[in-house]
Image (cartoon, rainbow, N blue to C red; front, side, top):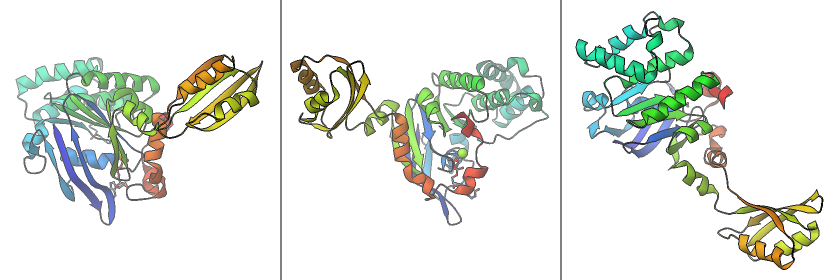
Length: 332
Ligand code: ADP
Ligand code: MG
């Protein structure tokens, strides 16, 4: 559906994104995840034809976004990070204005307005001035605008920034429902958000693509080695000795829990899973294991690992952007 190849954007001598290449398949919800200044908005602005690239190519449904802009743009609806605000219009007026700009006929526009207002849940407020709407409703008006004309791809830049928790939940549900009929790309600096909404995550760090995968696979990526956590009815020295001799066990930590119980944290050597040997070791001692859990790396660990250098001011990230940037951190 979308092919991005070798995309680079430089502002003067600052590189915002560098050599980004990826493919967006139909029918998924993609999340661009990255810290502020990573290059998410720059990428989205170029993909939607709002900003020229320094190098590289974007094809939407086979059409080049720069060379065949009109055809390419017809396939996308875009909610930018800072949507143009028409404070003194009502949602009805604003949506009609956008629908006409998108080339819909007057009659076609009326039906289309009704459709997107219902989808975005803004029928009740459609005759009020936009400046009097809550941020949540204004954001819905922006989403309704992106839906006009039924484009195949909906691109939303930080759609939940500045919303209160209830509005965030509602907006996420709306985005999920859009995923049934559209290909959706959203950006976020909030890990839990992309994890909750997206089925493909693209981690962007310092203007480069650090990883693309499903939330599950990304978690597995870091969980290369297994850690077992268990609670055993045994003395700590006895338990430590029983486990530390097992082949494939790299390190053991034992912690007395009282009541004759011990908690063991067993780190396996890379590529090894000693769970069964651990089980039989305690069977032989007739020491019951009350609990045994494999501990997986969380997606949060993956995110931190993959964006680690981003804080050090490399290519895309810069302190000044962090300060003036998004006010969304309170939601993390
Ligand atoms: P994100 O959306 O992930 O927070 P951006 O795409 O907005 O990141 O920014 C990526 C980098 O490009 C940042 O270092 C930012 O300061 C820089 N940048 C963005 N827009 C401009 C601009 N108009 N002029 C100069 N630098 C910019
Ligand atoms: Mg941004």
